[in-house]
Image (cartoon, rainbow, N blue to C red; front, top):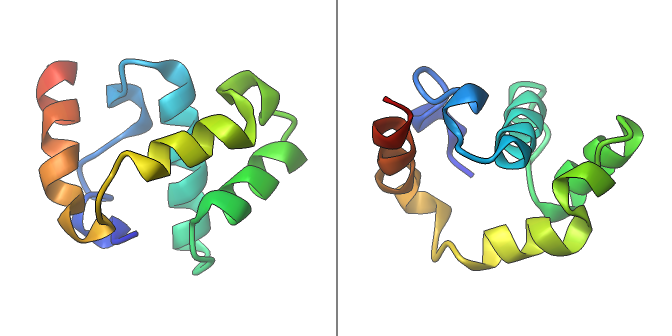
Length: 86
C-alpha cells in the first residue's frame, strides 16, 4: 500500500470500527519499519501482539483487502473515513 499518501493525516482513531483502526495502525507501523503491509505481515504482527482474533482473524483482513481494487487509489478510499470521523 502507498501509506505515504495518507500517513500524515489518516489516524486509527478516525475509523468507525475500532478493529479497522487496529488493523490500520498495525499496517502503518509495518510500513514505517519498511516492512510491506500485506495480509500476511499484518496478520503475523497482530498475532504476535495477541490481537488477531479480536480484529476478526486472517479471514476478516483478507476480506478487507479483497474489497479494494487497488492501493494506488488509497487517498480516494481514505477521504470518506476522514469525513465520517469529523
